[in-house]
Image (tube, rainbow, N blue to C red; front, top):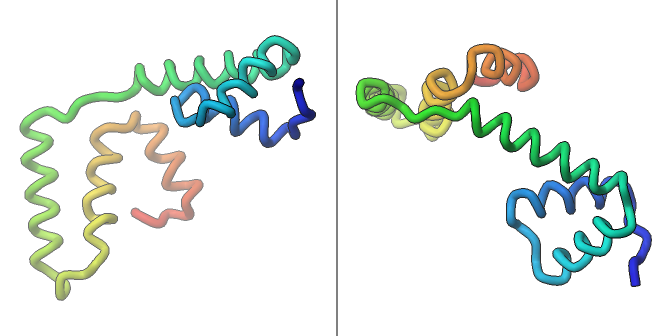
Length: 116
């Protein structure tokens, strides 16, 4: 029997289903919602479209870009007393090279210019 599910829980279920993160009992809940709730089906459809659109934007780093990234990481590791911010030093060039320019700028804007 289908129990009432809150809207935020439905959104999380849709996300987790599309990304293959559900437990068997959660999958059963998704199947029941698909049969009973057209709005949930629309959420699933939207999530799938978003995933497909983001997949189209993904790109593989070229060998030259990989070498440049490794050099930047090595340079940042050798300076400033081996600061634990190596993750930030590594992520900034990765995001710049792999994300579409507009998405990177939007991320920086939303994150309050954390990595810039």
